[in-house]
Image (cartoon, rainbow, N blue to C red; front, side, top):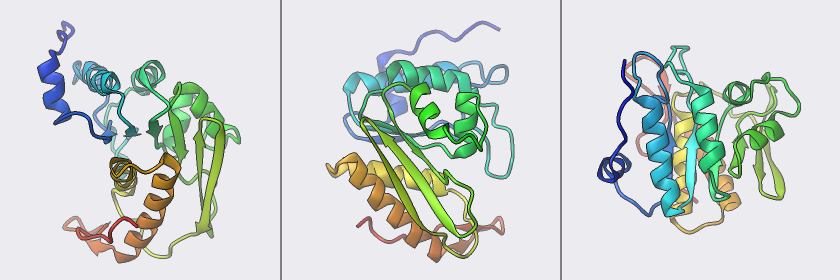
Length: 217
């Protein structure tokens, strides 16, 4: 099958839905090899257009569905795009499994945060649930020149769908308000912890975050 042609600037901007604002990029459809040959080009086009405007970017690198379904994502394409295009104002928010795939490592690698940061160029990294612990949650942030740990008791109750996307979006909202990256992450983590206590049942029978979540503090 022939490779897709280059995207025009208009096409890229249409895909982005505007310009000049911090944005959370959900790469669940990133880089299908056979079924969607244009997906790799789409990821590169979107990230390239955003990079050209030098705005803060939050990327949630979804590589598989939460219920275990295969999305056909190509971690190597996403990793290479981030390594080549990312700026210090970018943040990538993988969980342990996604970080292991992006780095070719394992989920229990004690150096997983640093390996992920090294693999993704200048972007900051927020490794979600960096340590397996039934009682506490530990998210580790690696930003240029600093490492910060967000550790707190694990919230009791069901594990709702969409928490990773919601966290990335909350961080992007904080950036849009002009906050510093670390302050955005701190506020978003606290916001999600509260939202998780207000889950509602979805039509699929699983717990979901509420449509009307508390405001970002």
